[in-house]
Length: 72
Image (cartoon, rainbow, N blue to C red; front, side):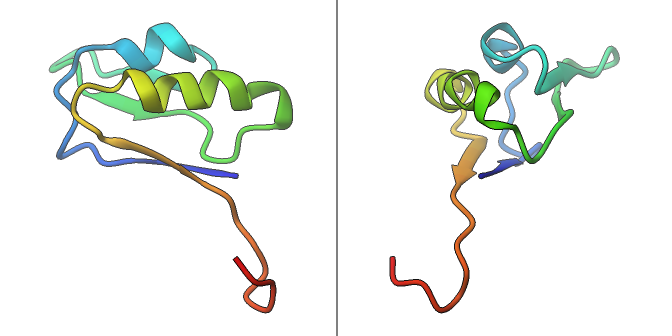
């Protein structure tokens, strides 16, 4: 799995930090979120999905990396 944070879409609500503090932080100067770990381990996946669902700006995506030969 791979997390992606679009800082241009981030509104600085901090919901991702509340949902997954090991994966996200916020910049002091403007509150925009910062991704701390783009490849969360299996133990962090529930928190990562919660952060995706909680983001009001839709700035967070989580995708499963699959080999190019594997059907989707």
